[in-house]
Image 1 (spheres, one colour):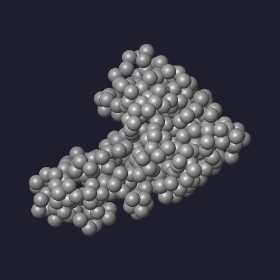
Image 2: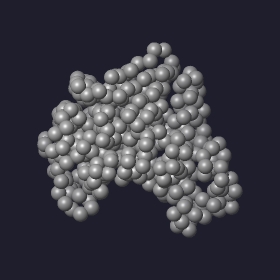
Image 3: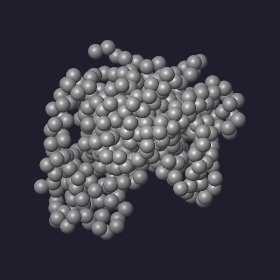
Image 4: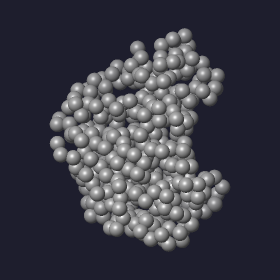
Length: 404
Protein backbone atom coordinates (compact mmCIF):
# COMPACT_ATOMS: atom_id res chain seq x y z
CA UNK A 1 0.00 0.00 0.00
CA UNK A 2 1.21 3.57 -0.58
CA UNK A 3 2.99 5.38 2.25
CA UNK A 4 0.91 8.24 3.62
CA UNK A 5 2.83 11.14 5.12
CA UNK A 6 1.81 14.18 7.11
CA UNK A 7 3.67 17.45 6.72
CA UNK A 8 3.47 17.81 10.48
CA UNK A 9 3.74 21.60 10.58
CA UNK A 10 2.40 23.40 13.61
CA UNK A 11 2.47 26.75 11.80
CA UNK A 12 3.22 28.18 8.40
CA UNK A 13 6.84 29.18 8.13
CA UNK A 14 8.07 26.50 10.51
CA UNK A 15 9.99 23.62 8.97
CA UNK A 16 8.85 20.61 10.99
CA UNK A 17 10.45 17.20 10.57
CA UNK A 18 7.63 15.36 12.30
CA UNK A 19 5.84 12.93 10.01
CA UNK A 20 3.73 9.81 10.22
CA UNK A 21 3.55 7.02 7.69
CA UNK A 22 1.02 4.21 7.70
CA UNK A 23 2.74 0.99 6.68
CA UNK A 24 0.02 -1.67 6.93
CA UNK A 25 -3.65 -2.03 7.83
CA UNK A 26 -5.31 -5.22 9.00
CA UNK A 27 -8.03 -6.11 6.51
CA UNK A 28 -10.33 -7.65 9.11
CA UNK A 29 -10.21 -5.16 11.99
CA UNK A 30 -8.67 -1.92 10.75
CA UNK A 31 -5.65 -2.16 13.07
CA UNK A 32 -2.78 -0.02 11.76
CA UNK A 33 0.98 -0.38 11.74
CA UNK A 34 2.99 2.76 11.09
CA UNK A 35 6.02 4.85 11.87
CA UNK A 36 6.34 8.30 13.40
CA UNK A 37 9.46 10.32 12.66
CA UNK A 38 10.70 12.97 15.11
CA UNK A 39 13.80 15.07 15.73
CA UNK A 40 15.01 12.43 18.19
CA UNK A 41 14.41 9.43 15.99
CA UNK A 42 11.55 7.27 14.81
CA UNK A 43 9.24 4.91 16.61
CA UNK A 44 6.98 2.22 15.23
CA UNK A 45 3.28 2.11 15.99
CA UNK A 46 1.19 0.84 17.66
CA UNK A 47 3.45 1.96 20.49
CA UNK A 48 3.28 2.01 24.27
CA UNK A 49 4.94 4.87 26.15
CA UNK A 50 6.25 4.11 29.65
CA UNK A 51 5.29 7.02 31.89
CA UNK A 52 8.22 9.08 33.16
CA UNK A 53 6.21 11.48 35.30
CA UNK A 54 9.07 13.43 36.86
CA UNK A 55 11.77 12.76 34.30
CA UNK A 56 12.07 9.13 35.34
CA UNK A 57 10.12 5.93 34.77
CA UNK A 58 9.84 4.87 38.39
CA UNK A 59 12.38 2.25 39.40
CA UNK A 60 14.10 1.98 36.01
CA UNK A 61 17.26 3.48 34.58
CA UNK A 62 17.34 4.86 31.07
CA UNK A 63 19.65 2.03 30.09
CA UNK A 64 17.07 -0.50 31.30
CA UNK A 65 14.38 1.20 29.24
CA UNK A 66 16.57 1.24 26.14
CA UNK A 67 17.49 -2.43 26.55
CA UNK A 68 13.80 -3.30 27.01
CA UNK A 69 13.01 -1.59 23.72
CA UNK A 70 11.27 1.62 24.82
CA UNK A 71 11.30 3.87 21.75
CA UNK A 72 9.35 6.78 23.27
CA UNK A 73 8.46 7.80 26.83
CA UNK A 74 6.09 10.31 28.39
CA UNK A 75 7.00 13.28 30.59
CA UNK A 76 4.63 15.24 32.79
CA UNK A 77 4.24 18.99 32.29
CA UNK A 78 2.60 19.70 35.66
CA UNK A 79 5.15 17.89 37.80
CA UNK A 80 8.23 19.09 35.91
CA UNK A 81 6.93 22.68 36.03
CA UNK A 82 6.64 22.52 39.83
CA UNK A 83 9.88 20.62 40.38
CA UNK A 84 12.63 21.28 39.35
CA UNK A 85 11.02 23.91 37.09
CA UNK A 86 10.82 24.16 33.32
CA UNK A 87 13.26 27.09 33.19
CA UNK A 88 15.87 25.07 35.09
CA UNK A 89 15.46 22.12 32.73
CA UNK A 90 15.60 24.46 29.74
CA UNK A 91 18.85 26.02 30.94
CA UNK A 92 20.30 22.53 31.23
CA UNK A 93 19.51 21.79 27.58
CA UNK A 94 15.92 20.54 27.74
CA UNK A 95 14.37 17.35 29.05
CA UNK A 96 16.27 15.00 26.73
CA UNK A 97 19.61 16.37 27.92
CA UNK A 98 18.47 16.71 31.54
CA UNK A 99 17.44 13.07 31.90
CA UNK A 100 19.96 11.67 29.40
CA UNK A 101 17.36 10.23 27.04
CA UNK A 102 18.12 10.47 23.33
CA UNK A 103 14.88 8.96 22.01
CA UNK A 104 11.51 10.67 21.47
CA UNK A 105 9.53 12.16 24.36
CA UNK A 106 5.85 13.12 24.52
CA UNK A 107 4.78 15.58 27.20
CA UNK A 108 1.19 15.82 28.41
CA UNK A 109 -0.48 19.21 28.78
CA UNK A 110 -0.92 19.24 32.56
CA UNK A 111 -4.69 19.27 32.14
CA UNK A 112 -5.28 15.88 33.73
CA UNK A 113 -3.19 16.70 36.80
CA UNK A 114 -5.07 19.91 37.55
CA UNK A 115 -8.30 18.00 36.91
CA UNK A 116 -7.30 15.55 39.64
CA UNK A 117 -6.70 18.46 42.05
CA UNK A 118 -10.36 19.55 41.95
CA UNK A 119 -10.35 20.70 45.56
CA UNK A 120 -7.30 22.92 44.94
CA UNK A 121 -8.23 24.55 41.62
CA UNK A 122 -10.35 27.29 40.09
CA UNK A 123 -11.34 26.95 36.46
CA UNK A 124 -11.96 29.92 34.14
CA UNK A 125 -11.71 30.47 30.39
CA UNK A 126 -8.26 31.96 30.98
CA UNK A 127 -6.95 28.72 32.45
CA UNK A 128 -6.76 26.86 35.75
CA UNK A 129 -5.58 28.46 38.95
CA UNK A 130 -4.34 25.81 41.34
CA UNK A 131 -2.36 25.26 44.50
CA UNK A 132 0.83 23.25 44.34
CA UNK A 133 0.55 19.87 46.04
CA UNK A 134 4.20 20.39 47.11
CA UNK A 135 4.17 23.72 48.96
CA UNK A 136 0.67 25.19 48.55
CA UNK A 137 1.85 28.02 46.28
CA UNK A 138 -0.65 29.38 43.74
CA UNK A 139 -0.14 29.02 39.99
CA UNK A 140 -2.07 29.64 36.77
CA UNK A 141 -1.82 27.00 34.08
CA UNK A 142 -3.24 28.28 30.80
CA UNK A 143 -2.89 27.13 27.18
CA UNK A 144 -0.11 29.66 26.74
CA UNK A 145 1.71 28.60 29.92
CA UNK A 146 1.41 24.92 29.03
CA UNK A 147 2.98 25.60 25.62
CA UNK A 148 5.79 27.62 27.20
CA UNK A 149 6.57 24.79 29.61
CA UNK A 150 6.52 22.15 26.89
CA UNK A 151 8.60 24.33 24.55
CA UNK A 152 11.13 24.76 27.36
CA UNK A 153 11.23 21.00 27.93
CA UNK A 154 11.78 20.43 24.21
CA UNK A 155 9.59 17.35 23.88
CA UNK A 156 9.02 15.88 20.42
CA UNK A 157 5.26 15.68 20.83
CA UNK A 158 3.40 18.43 22.67
CA UNK A 159 -0.18 18.02 23.87
CA UNK A 160 -2.61 20.92 23.54
CA UNK A 161 -3.94 22.17 26.89
CA UNK A 162 -7.32 20.65 27.68
CA UNK A 163 -9.88 20.25 30.41
CA UNK A 164 -10.30 16.60 31.31
CA UNK A 165 -14.09 16.33 31.56
CA UNK A 166 -15.05 14.78 34.91
CA UNK A 167 -17.25 11.71 35.16
CA UNK A 168 -20.12 11.60 35.65
CA UNK A 169 -21.02 14.73 33.71
CA UNK A 170 -24.31 15.89 32.29
CA UNK A 171 -24.53 16.50 28.56
CA UNK A 172 -24.50 20.27 29.15
CA UNK A 173 -21.42 19.98 31.37
CA UNK A 174 -19.64 17.84 28.79
CA UNK A 175 -20.55 20.30 26.03
CA UNK A 176 -19.25 23.28 28.02
CA UNK A 177 -16.04 21.37 28.77
CA UNK A 178 -15.34 20.35 25.19
CA UNK A 179 -16.05 23.87 23.92
CA UNK A 180 -13.50 25.24 26.38
CA UNK A 181 -11.03 22.54 25.39
CA UNK A 182 -11.41 23.46 21.73
CA UNK A 183 -10.87 27.17 22.47
CA UNK A 184 -7.80 26.22 24.46
CA UNK A 185 -6.63 24.00 21.58
CA UNK A 186 -6.69 26.95 19.19
CA UNK A 187 -4.79 29.12 21.67
CA UNK A 188 -2.28 26.31 22.24
CA UNK A 189 -1.52 26.04 18.54
CA UNK A 190 -1.22 29.79 18.12
CA UNK A 191 1.11 30.29 21.06
CA UNK A 192 3.37 27.33 20.30
CA UNK A 193 3.75 28.71 16.79
CA UNK A 194 4.62 32.13 18.19
CA UNK A 195 7.29 30.65 20.44
CA UNK A 196 8.86 28.81 17.52
CA UNK A 197 8.54 31.54 14.91
CA UNK A 198 9.65 34.52 17.02
CA UNK A 199 12.86 34.21 19.03
CA UNK A 200 11.91 37.22 21.14
CA UNK A 201 8.59 35.59 22.10
CA UNK A 202 10.45 32.67 23.66
CA UNK A 203 13.05 34.93 25.25
CA UNK A 204 10.32 36.95 26.97
CA UNK A 205 9.30 33.81 28.85
CA UNK A 206 12.89 33.18 29.96
CA UNK A 207 13.43 30.13 27.74
CA UNK A 208 15.13 29.16 24.51
CA UNK A 209 13.81 26.74 21.93
CA UNK A 210 15.82 23.54 22.31
CA UNK A 211 13.76 21.45 19.87
CA UNK A 212 12.59 23.37 16.78
CA UNK A 213 10.54 20.47 15.39
CA UNK A 214 7.87 19.86 18.02
CA UNK A 215 4.63 18.24 16.85
CA UNK A 216 1.33 19.29 18.43
CA UNK A 217 -1.56 16.91 19.15
CA UNK A 218 -5.14 18.00 19.86
CA UNK A 219 -7.25 16.23 22.49
CA UNK A 220 -10.79 15.01 21.85
CA UNK A 221 -13.28 15.43 24.72
CA UNK A 222 -17.04 14.99 25.17
CA UNK A 223 -17.34 12.43 27.97
CA UNK A 224 -19.43 9.39 26.92
CA UNK A 225 -21.69 11.36 24.55
CA UNK A 226 -20.88 10.17 21.05
CA UNK A 227 -22.34 13.19 19.24
CA UNK A 228 -20.26 15.50 21.44
CA UNK A 229 -17.16 13.45 20.69
CA UNK A 230 -17.85 14.01 16.98
CA UNK A 231 -18.40 17.73 17.55
CA UNK A 232 -15.11 17.99 19.41
CA UNK A 233 -13.22 16.10 16.71
CA UNK A 234 -14.69 18.20 13.90
CA UNK A 235 -13.50 21.37 15.63
CA UNK A 236 -10.01 19.95 16.21
CA UNK A 237 -9.68 18.91 12.58
CA UNK A 238 -10.61 22.43 11.47
CA UNK A 239 -7.83 23.82 13.68
CA UNK A 240 -5.40 21.24 12.33
CA UNK A 241 -2.98 19.16 14.37
CA UNK A 242 -0.12 16.72 13.79
CA UNK A 243 -2.00 14.01 15.69
CA UNK A 244 -5.24 13.48 17.60
CA UNK A 245 -5.75 12.07 21.08
CA UNK A 246 -8.79 10.67 22.85
CA UNK A 247 -8.90 12.16 26.34
CA UNK A 248 -11.29 12.11 29.26
CA UNK A 249 -11.60 8.32 29.47
CA UNK A 250 -10.65 5.83 32.17
CA UNK A 251 -11.82 8.40 34.73
CA UNK A 252 -14.56 6.34 36.36
CA UNK A 253 -16.87 5.32 33.53
CA UNK A 254 -17.77 1.69 32.84
CA UNK A 255 -15.32 -0.02 30.52
CA UNK A 256 -18.12 -0.74 28.06
CA UNK A 257 -18.84 3.00 27.85
CA UNK A 258 -15.16 3.73 27.31
CA UNK A 259 -14.99 1.33 24.40
CA UNK A 260 -18.22 2.66 22.91
CA UNK A 261 -16.43 6.00 22.64
CA UNK A 262 -13.15 4.55 21.33
CA UNK A 263 -14.87 2.38 18.70
CA UNK A 264 -16.94 5.33 17.57
CA UNK A 265 -14.37 8.11 17.44
CA UNK A 266 -11.01 6.48 16.60
CA UNK A 267 -11.98 5.41 13.03
CA UNK A 268 -13.26 8.97 12.40
CA UNK A 269 -9.89 10.52 13.18
CA UNK A 270 -7.72 11.56 10.20
CA UNK A 271 -6.28 8.49 8.56
CA UNK A 272 -2.88 10.06 7.94
CA UNK A 273 -2.22 11.22 11.51
CA UNK A 274 -1.36 9.29 14.71
CA UNK A 275 -4.26 8.40 17.01
CA UNK A 276 -3.49 8.39 20.74
CA UNK A 277 -5.66 6.91 23.51
CA UNK A 278 -4.55 8.65 26.70
CA UNK A 279 -4.07 6.83 29.99
CA UNK A 280 -5.22 3.38 28.86
CA UNK A 281 -4.65 0.70 30.07
CA UNK A 282 -4.58 -3.05 30.59
CA UNK A 283 -3.14 -5.39 27.94
CA UNK A 284 -6.71 -6.34 26.99
CA UNK A 285 -7.67 -2.68 26.62
CA UNK A 286 -4.72 -1.97 24.37
CA UNK A 287 -5.32 -4.93 22.06
CA UNK A 288 -8.99 -4.01 21.66
CA UNK A 289 -8.16 -0.35 21.00
CA UNK A 290 -5.54 -1.31 18.40
CA UNK A 291 -8.28 -3.28 16.66
CA UNK A 292 -10.19 -0.05 15.94
CA UNK A 293 -7.18 1.88 14.71
CA UNK A 294 -5.47 3.43 17.78
CA UNK A 295 -1.72 3.93 17.40
CA UNK A 296 -0.34 5.25 20.69
CA UNK A 297 -0.85 4.45 24.38
CA UNK A 298 0.45 5.35 27.83
CA UNK A 299 -0.38 4.13 31.30
CA UNK A 300 1.25 4.05 34.74
CA UNK A 301 -0.11 0.54 35.29
CA UNK A 302 3.06 -1.46 34.47
CA UNK A 303 5.20 0.27 37.09
CA UNK A 304 2.47 1.06 39.62
CA UNK A 305 1.20 -2.51 39.66
CA UNK A 306 4.76 -3.80 39.89
CA UNK A 307 5.37 -1.80 43.06
CA UNK A 308 2.27 -3.46 44.52
CA UNK A 309 3.44 -6.96 43.62
CA UNK A 310 1.22 -7.51 40.58
CA UNK A 311 2.97 -8.84 37.48
CA UNK A 312 1.64 -9.18 33.93
CA UNK A 313 2.04 -12.48 32.10
CA UNK A 314 0.69 -14.20 29.02
CA UNK A 315 -1.58 -16.13 31.39
CA UNK A 316 -3.02 -13.07 33.10
CA UNK A 317 -1.94 -11.22 36.23
CA UNK A 318 0.26 -12.84 38.86
CA UNK A 319 0.30 -11.64 42.47
CA UNK A 320 3.85 -12.31 43.61
CA UNK A 321 2.81 -11.87 47.27
CA UNK A 322 0.89 -15.13 47.09
CA UNK A 323 2.42 -17.83 49.31
CA UNK A 324 2.15 -20.36 46.47
CA UNK A 325 5.23 -18.75 44.90
CA UNK A 326 7.46 -19.11 47.98
CA UNK A 327 9.19 -22.21 46.60
CA UNK A 328 8.46 -21.66 42.90
CA UNK A 329 11.66 -21.85 40.80
CA UNK A 330 9.91 -20.90 37.55
CA UNK A 331 10.33 -17.46 35.97
CA UNK A 332 7.51 -14.96 36.20
CA UNK A 333 6.38 -15.92 32.69
CA UNK A 334 7.95 -18.84 30.85
CA UNK A 335 6.88 -17.28 27.53
CA UNK A 336 8.63 -13.99 28.32
CA UNK A 337 12.11 -13.23 27.06
CA UNK A 338 12.84 -10.23 29.28
CA UNK A 339 16.02 -9.90 31.34
CA UNK A 340 14.14 -10.63 34.58
CA UNK A 341 12.50 -13.85 33.36
CA UNK A 342 15.81 -14.99 31.89
CA UNK A 343 17.54 -14.84 35.28
CA UNK A 344 15.26 -14.75 38.33
CA UNK A 345 12.64 -17.04 39.84
CA UNK A 346 9.22 -16.29 41.24
CA UNK A 347 10.50 -17.43 44.63
CA UNK A 348 13.27 -14.85 44.55
CA UNK A 349 10.93 -12.07 43.42
CA UNK A 350 8.52 -12.97 46.22
CA UNK A 351 11.35 -12.97 48.75
CA UNK A 352 12.42 -9.48 47.63
CA UNK A 353 8.89 -8.17 47.81
CA UNK A 354 8.14 -9.68 51.24
CA UNK A 355 11.47 -8.37 52.56
CA UNK A 356 10.76 -4.85 51.36
CA UNK A 357 13.86 -4.86 49.19
CA UNK A 358 14.03 -2.10 46.55
CA UNK A 359 15.31 -4.57 43.99
CA UNK A 360 11.91 -6.30 44.09
CA UNK A 361 10.20 -3.19 42.71
CA UNK A 362 12.98 -2.63 40.18
CA UNK A 363 12.83 -6.15 38.74
CA UNK A 364 9.04 -6.27 38.82
CA UNK A 365 8.83 -2.92 37.03
CA UNK A 366 11.35 -4.01 34.42
CA UNK A 367 9.38 -7.18 33.74
CA UNK A 368 6.04 -5.39 33.45
CA UNK A 369 7.37 -2.68 31.14
CA UNK A 370 9.14 -5.32 29.05
CA UNK A 371 5.92 -7.33 28.85
CA UNK A 372 4.02 -4.31 27.50
CA UNK A 373 6.75 -3.44 25.00
CA UNK A 374 7.05 -7.05 23.80
CA UNK A 375 3.26 -7.19 23.43
CA UNK A 376 3.36 -4.10 21.22
CA UNK A 377 6.09 -5.69 19.10
CA UNK A 378 3.94 -8.78 18.60
CA UNK A 379 0.96 -6.59 17.70
CA UNK A 380 2.97 -4.67 15.11
CA UNK A 381 4.34 -7.86 13.60
CA UNK A 382 0.91 -9.47 13.34
CA UNK A 383 -0.56 -6.41 11.61
CA UNK A 384 2.30 -6.36 9.10
CA UNK A 385 1.88 -10.09 8.42
CA UNK A 386 -1.90 -9.82 8.15
CA UNK A 387 -2.50 -12.07 11.17
CA UNK A 388 -3.60 -9.55 13.79
CA UNK A 389 -7.05 -11.07 14.32
CA UNK A 390 -5.51 -14.48 14.98
CA UNK A 391 -2.97 -12.92 17.37
CA UNK A 392 -5.74 -11.01 19.14
CA UNK A 393 -7.84 -14.15 19.70
CA UNK A 394 -4.88 -16.20 20.91
CA UNK A 395 -3.49 -13.48 23.18
CA UNK A 396 -6.81 -12.66 24.82
CA UNK A 397 -7.59 -16.35 25.25
CA UNK A 398 -4.29 -16.83 27.08
CA UNK A 399 -5.00 -13.93 29.42
CA UNK A 400 -8.46 -15.32 30.15
CA UNK A 401 -7.08 -18.73 31.12
CA UNK A 402 -5.24 -17.22 34.07
CA UNK A 403 -2.54 -18.76 36.21
CA UNK A 404 -2.55 -22.51 36.79
